[in-house]
Amino acid sequence: MTRLDAVLWDMDGTLLDSEKLWDIAVRELAGELGHEMDDAMRHALIGASGPNAMRIMFTGLGLDPTPAAITEAGEWIERRVIELFQDPVPWRPGAADALATMKAAGIPMALVTNTKRSLTEYGLDTLDRGYFHATVCADEVPEGKPAPDVYLRAAELLGVAPEHAVAIEDSPTGALAAEAAGCTVLVVPCEIAVPTAPGRTFRDSLVGLTPADLHALVVDRHRVG
Ligand SMILES: [Mg+2]
Picture 1: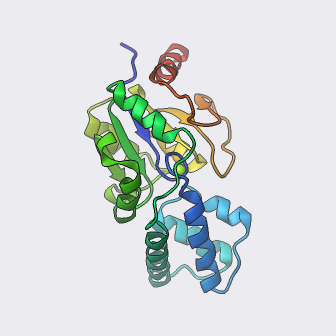
Picture 2 (picture 1 turned 180 degrees about the horizontal axis):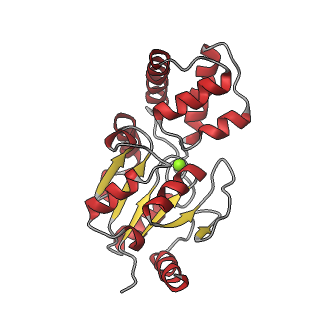
Picture 3 (picture 1 turned 90 degrees about the horizontal axis):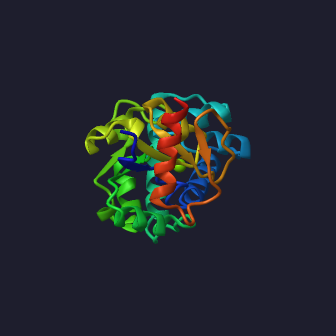
């Protein structure tokens, strides 16, 4: 039977407007390293996971990505982002209502993020843990997004088949991960454009999103095969 069994939410840029806080941190780190980050490189970092993001950054700035330098830069970013996450993180438009609506409809939900656990806990202080049956972070699986691991783990924890789950993502990296796991993907772009692709559905914002909208995505996907 074709049905919607779960909603798998990305955090940064999808539920929370936290990419702007990451933006502050990575631009400051580039400054600490004696460089200025251009927008192209900043865009390449959106949705990337910790060590991978640091390697992209070092290579882009022409710096040697030694393991020690990558670790140190990662620790710097974590400290700075924790500072920035101390205040409540702003929500993306419609996100709080969409979570409440899905919960009221009894749809199981998971948070599936490329952010590491220690930082995700700050985001959960804003989001409310009660919405999620499971939360999966990039540092809890072998590989972060764009690998499918975080999504596969979330589906496993919820006991649902990925093809009966809708993943909601704002970045190309996140959409690739969800697709690789076999999820139905709804893209709500935030900071950067996301390329169209077969099976990818787009929406301007989460405002007014209903369980019926997500159910229709799963049904359509199985109809077209
Ligand atoms: Mg995101």
